[in-house]
Image (cartoon, rainbow, N blue to C red):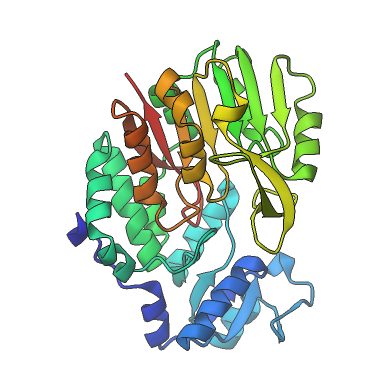
Length: 352
């Protein structure tokens, strides 16, 4: 499998680039990319935003220019996207820009350290090979290769070529039904609960929702107030009961951070005492610990699993290994849903 990961590292490409490099967008993602640029001696010329969004902002000491200004100033240039998008209009816009310029979306880790490079893949050659061979169908294997090539190269074409819609998952793999016993780890404001119920005609047996961020938890309470048979816990999912430090962003990307505030965490095995038919994990890099913390539940009830696989560099092999360790009967599928960068790349595990 490793021979099919043939792309040049995006960072090496940018280091050797002759065209000017322009950052597309501001914010935390741009800060992280600039940090890598500084470490690797990569120089960027300017930061730009879409024409309708330029408001005289300055970013890292430079005035943010519009796309039209960038064209007038540089003519041709390399675009380095620094933010995440998933709505259809913006994805279409990215495709259009990538037809006019070299368009790259470098991967920086959401959790953990280190960059995802071809060297990283080679260092974990055996693990990636084993994970690839675990996957249950050819689409999963092609998605695996496409996402890895994207993470190395930053080329968005790889993501567009392998993207799947969620209805394929819910209808053909997870096959959610009207009597699901749902455990949602990282429930945010209940958005994925609403997504699940749209495929079950709004019916279910029970829902247990974990959300560690206090503000998100209040949104969850408010937006699921009309649901019956739901228990909500202002907790993070982990492998045991523990207080950890958590960065409270009041958004999707709230995550563990040693400089954050103390938040209570606990395991599925400690909290959920009844049966379970479906577990979803989108917990900002804590998925491996949460699987360990649900091991008795998983071994006993063999629920369908929906496990996000894009927070840590090692997720593509540690997570399928752990799922198989907990129950070797699982068939594991990988799908990437419309998103740039490779967020919404998820493992789905079921027992036929």
